[in-house]
Image (cartoon, rainbow, N blue to C red; front, side, top):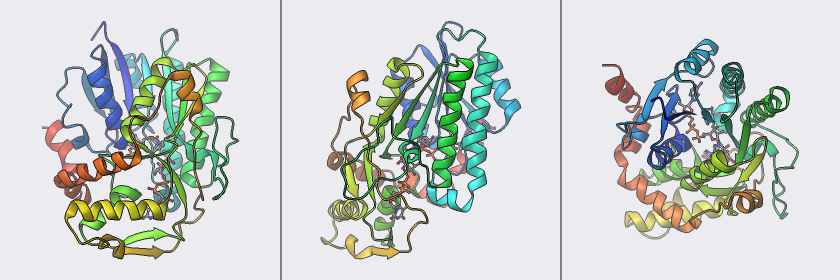
Length: 353
Ligand code: NAD
Ligand code: DAU
């Protein structure tokens, strides 16, 4: 372990985190990747089954809210870098359990920052990377062509985005106050493999497969800017390695879709893949009560990361979405495990015997 850099990735058993862990393990054999995850309902070690035996991979089950545990982890590994993704991430859940979001997203981030500040006496070669969301910028108007830039003032509207905004502010405060070397990114909606089927795309894939209703919130005209998760992981790689300290990078796919148009596209792809009659899935669409405080539109101006760090998305939405549908249909065992809760036994079997 001595010559290798120790990189802490938090939330590595989640959707985006598992893609980041996989990419870093494969691309950087000179890093020891330590994946710290509490394994909440959203954390699933089966997401990393293909890489879990890599010699440069270590899993640590733990809670970022536990101050002493986080301090001891920094002592144990003497991390060179931190890529912080662990969070409570589902907006609907933040409406019913706001305190849980404050604990993990605010206090958890604070614990990591503070441990880094205490432990990194010499910050040469160190970096704390905070992965955040475009939701901190609030909501854009439906039929305008305005975009979120890195200068857009913060205006979070859900308990989730308020907690993420607070954590972003703490990260910047540690840069300004303590010279902690930090970098941040704010990304738009991700889609792809290993996403928990509570989020729009995997939920609807699963419901279509099972002929269950597709609950469309409000008028269905809410708009999101979708990015393939693998492209987000690639962006995290370039920000971590080439981003300028103290800076923020917006990440997005220039790929806005009104929910209802995306749902129509998804329904049609699913009918084709499942060999069902054209129009079958659309019949499952059910308009339901709106999400409280539902943000009308998100759209990212990603020109800074494109220009400064030479990153751009590698795939079109149509290709990425079809590939995503294929993945879920080819991984029905994964889908069944996460919907039944069976995946939560995987850790017990693999790590605690
Ligand atoms: P996710 O919900 O799929 O995974 C979150 C992971 O964090 C899980 O593995 C969970 O077990 C872990 N975790 C939760 N609380 C923890 C705690 N207290 N201690 C340790 N681990 C804990 O999330 P995701 O969609 O992969 O998002 C990852 C990060 O990216 C989050 O910070 C999120 O705000 C940000 N983000 C997500 C999106 C998106 O579209 N999903 C877009 C932009 C930014
Ligand atoms: O913008 C980045 C954010 O994207 C991330 O920071 C969040 O962690 C992630 O959850 C996501 O937030 P959204 O609220 O946009 O994602 P969600 O998949 O929950 O919803 C996408 C859109 O679809 C939103 O307008 C609400 C709508 N929706 C969602 C669900 C789950 C429905 O109409 N019906 C549904 O059942």
